[in-house]
Length: 416
Ligand SMILES: *Cc1c(COP(=O)(O)O)cnc(C)c1O
Image 1: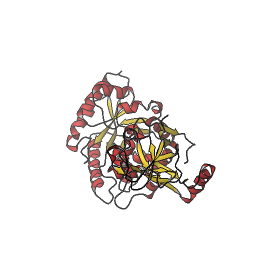
Image 2: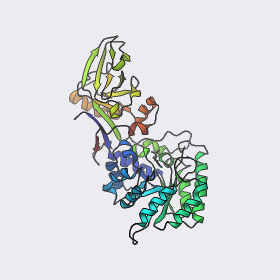
Image 3: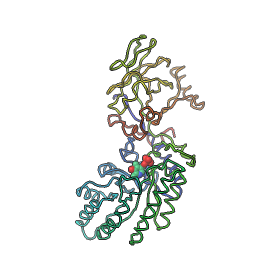
Image 4: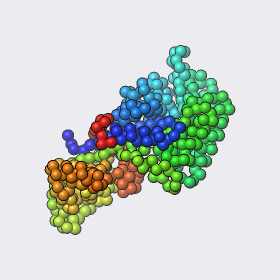
């Protein structure tokens, strides 16, 4: 097998989940596993999360939801980006999924599909999204009365949940989220005044779980209407704390641990002399006699080409810069300053590695273990790649392509 893989620590995923549960206080969690669990492999992650107690999972589409068939008897699945057509409404009902709705068309398709079932069938639960200021999805307050009329006449549908999404939850000490919560409170008041009694009220993401301006506000609103409150973390489940701006985020966020490690191996080595070049278009010229290692990973694996001549990897616990352009399937790294690099050495693109540069064989293994305690290891996070690329860790993780096998470190086998 081509030596490029992503190790997924399900133990860490579960630890992060427990940490989020504690941080969320009274509010429950909808564990967001959209986009193949942010590139981590949705079926295995969903399975681990449900075993750890998750009762709700959030995905983008019906197609994503059907990959989770193994856990669907134990957990509800929320389709967060609505539905596209009546056939999809049928599929959502057939598969017992819970669609988020806001367009009048969503309700028409679902009502039509729900009414075609037997009279004895349970009403189809839907969650109504309110646009409280993000202007992306959700019904705007001015349109809410019309949508509620529609819901009232659609007897085969039941309004189980009401939700909204915050646009700047990581900005602390700002009024943006407060203003959105106020709009959300108005919408809930209108919904209650029309006699609807939703069971669940949910909002927010990873950042909301860790901020005093987020979770308590949602819990309070839910309590007012006798509903349960839920928050919808995604990124933090996978071990990345939001980057908060301002004071007031819970320190607990720092204890999150990245779930994914992206690894490869050295497949070739060569020395080039000062003045010689490396890679397409010769964008790198050696300033000295340089030892170059080749790794079998490129932009087709999701290693962003913007990392060319700017990114780094870990070899023997040391940083080695990427040199020259990243190719489709290959990348060159400069290991001149890393002693003893050999064919087959493990290379870390995202993750931790202990420093074994000074020794080899059994000694290296022992040193690796000993040095773990003394902190003699290096780490590369998805944030580091994102900063170089000018993006966010979400995109770095989601872009690791399907060509990279996800290797699940089974429950109880992880480094914890
Ligand atoms: C993706 C998403 C989330 C999770 O966001 P994170 O920032 O990853 O925690 C929550 N709610 C909705 C509606 C989303 O689309």
